[in-house]
Length: 68
Image 1 (cartoon, rainbow, N blue to C red):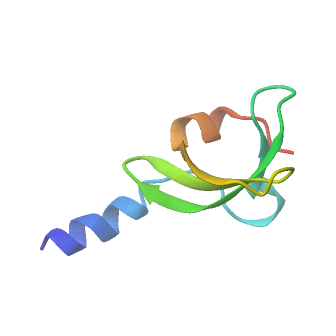
Image 2 (cartoon, rainbow, N blue to C red; image 1 turned 180 degrees about the vertical axis):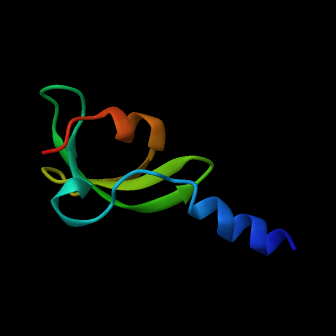
């Protein structure tokens, strides 16, 4: 049953990861990043557009960052 709980946790992310909404800025004037998908523990995988670096980022922060 734990696999069902883990799968359900993926749907808990309410960060829009579709269309152009998946592109955001770190803060008001920070670098552009792309949300790639959920990463568990209320985090998302992102790619910094300028550098190509991929990392995990808090989903709560991604929800608050401005859309590009």
